[in-house]
Image (cartoon, helix red, strand yellow):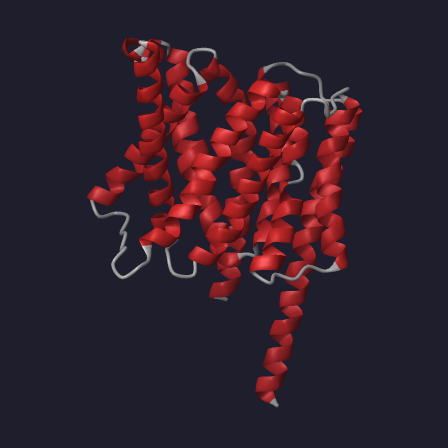
Length: 317
């Protein structure tokens, strides 16, 4: 019963994760109107790290790194947030956000491949088809909008692809580390390392360009403050906690496919806040995405139920 309850919480956590990420695109656009990408990342991770540090200091969140291999967690932070956000930021300087959205749709596919190689996770033919269906749903939405990939722009495409690869690698490595680390411990390390590295990079960049005095200027904007509060508390801290918790309970391939739900959320957010039209092709693509997510995870739950029942019969025998 506890295992089943944990799995239900994991599915709820990763669904919440997708919803938060879907709205993060809107808040990221708002923040970038007031600050550079690097400064936005600094404030984003400063807030997330500070917010999590408060309950840690008061003992409400207990972390225990004694006897654990902290060096093993460093590659995780190198993949996410450092690698992912750095590659994504520079990739979007050379490519469009639509190209980024199309490529990011295939992150679950990369996750499935890497998880099968390094974690020996097995997926059925139906689950593989479901993952590809979910990815195709995202591509269908962008394609019907008239978006596509300009293959002549290989610099941006390569950087965005590498950002997807780091995201997939993070899911697989986190799944492995969470056998010895608690989700909160992994999250705290990720946020702390991310904040320190981005702060050093931002201060170095401002010092070199003689603009260090402008680093606090974005805080004069109420829009920026609201945006980074959302990005820091929800889209960094809460998404890290929910993703790490889900990965501690579910296979990486099952968790990865939920990322495509954020495309549906961004469509709803655009309609609600930017008065964008929800088209018929957006609905069709959304149905593909949802069907893909349900297919990937439904088959997994069924196989676990069968295995559980088989074990019960063996015990009785």
